[in-house]
Image (cartoon, rainbow, N blue to C red; front, side, top):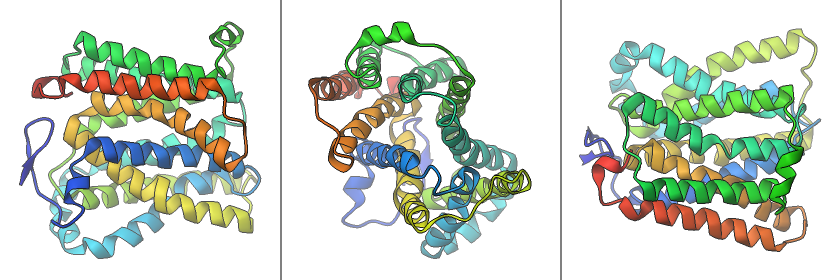
Length: 318
């Protein structure tokens, strides 16, 4: 058994060579944000290749089917808990998995890349704020300094190194969709503190099932409105990759990280997504590497490192 960021005792996962990695939130969150950053690039590549609601909702049943054989016994044992906490699981999977993804994909059609990136940078701030409102979590000055540094690093990426471009920011309906998605995922992150006592992979499967139910509703709406089309071969390749990394690994790692260090400290890592996304664009899409990429990476990693200096204080972990 082990204790999480709230001091609660949780059932352990299987021991082995990966046990150290499974208990390292820094490593887990770096891998998570790398997967999410790749998903940002894939989302741009998926336009016209995959219908958005299909992409947002139909990953989850396949992910659940792939993971279930490894934890089917714990899954069966957890069924009574799932029945007891069904509303929590439905909201967490439906909103945090499917609705968030759907908003993410739809917003891209209505807003600019700069606006999108700027608004995504608000996610850690929203997470910290919601956690403070919900739990009155302590926020030491050093943590707020680290948060500000990660936010500035994300803004450097969003504005291509020219912060004065913020003066050109104009709200549109796509921006409201992005903000709604950020609020949903920040709330999802904070609400993970209330997750039931069960194996992490079983919890992931339960959320996948909930996400699938909501996904079928969105898919039916997409089909009935005439927006559905069959994915292209390239679309299927993107879809399959997204199941393995941005869907299964990143969500499992993220849930585990929140369990280890709480929602506020985990939220700090979110601003690695635009930085890694920009660096991946350099490698994958051949975009030029410029000075603000390096400056943003230093700011975000430096902000996380500074905020983590109070890591030894358990009550400040959330």
